[in-house]
Length: 315
Length: 299
Image (cartoon, rainbow over the protein chains, first blue to last red):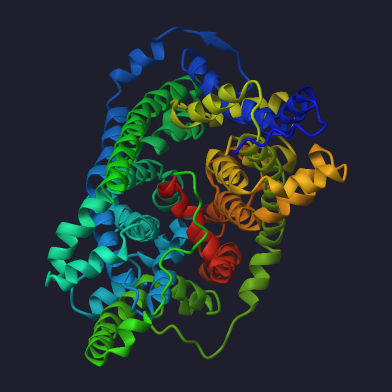
């Protein structure tokens, strides 16, 4: 693996070359990953009203204010509501489709996969704008179709009504990112050895029994990773929400990232003053929550490896 | 765990052994039909928003919300001309293409070089680099957009596309580095030995022997970075808040909402221009998109 070429070249020269090769990545990473990471924590401790103005160190004041900010907690709650509701629906439906498409004998499987995956590659902000048209209460195609089918009497203002807006965005989100989960499941399903399923079929197991007894145990370690990746993805929906509703109506769809953006940049929502320090503090608290999920990920991966190791040992 | 499977996910190979037996074959055909009856309509509904958009982009403004019929007798290509010229979509397209192209080049160079030495060499400080990569994934990042803007201001890059390009390619792309490192580490050592005997140096061994062998990884990384840079929203939105000339397509089309709100067909045409390049790329190079996404689970 490590091909230290002893032929001629001295170790020292190789060492220098290695550092030279690392340099571009480390400089870029230093500037745009680590510097911002560290500074965002520092900025959470200052009062700072716009890039042109001075920063005043205020200690933990921003956090103290944040803890009592009901808009922050409401936004926080909405983001996690997304995780609790949208993630299971997305993963369940995606698993179902993935199992159907994983069938080797299905000739059109690749064709279906293309359709389901298509929304994933498109720009969230543009799709969000398009969706405001598609879901429009003024002769938008969805309302027209529903009225055509007599499913609804009068048009529904999907995004303009504070009772339906969040659920409508959730629906769009599930549709848009469904393909990611489907691909995750397909990747996991490919690790199930075909012989196992054939052996189960020979023993007279039906489709459900095969899934329960053969496929599911092998999928389980992957499922942990997939749940975490999907949850993480569901917490980062700024582009979609901002372009569809900008957090409205009356904050009904203000998820955490929209709250932070509007606190830091869109001054009309925060009383005319951009609050960069306060936004940073909100971002850091949110980052901590995401880290908890990332740690879960680490734990899940570790567990998955253990299980896989046992399987390899048993074979 | 580090092995990268280049095989596409979900490839459909008909199993000949199964095919030969006639009852199994009939069962497969029935299953194919049942699945088609369910999934073909579902797939059409699935991409309906895009079909509707495409149709709206060639209708007149009065027709856009006129009914569910996707077909129109008169194709109004003038919508595209109007969007491209009057609504500055042409400019936004160029900006997006420059930022995306530039960030692909920068990212690819930095991750390929890093992946190469991490995958094939032992050197002092390797553990530190590995630790940094881990930290980039697991440490809470806070709201990094504010320091990034501040940094661009300090570097005097805030009013050119260079700043946006660097910021889009900056950030350690850990998954891409791991993809390269894994692929490089699998390549046999014999490959370089002959070249070294011929007097090839460190860089030439990388450039002429190993890099050309990593084409699948290069393709996957290009696609991932293309998808990231072309579709990104928050960063270009904030960078171009007071600089409309630097807007990318996502930000430009988003900002129409206020300005041109009654020109629905023009908006639809602009949206098609924004979505079409990546959709076409996806249809042509689907394999690499799928691999790029699946990589997150496999590693």
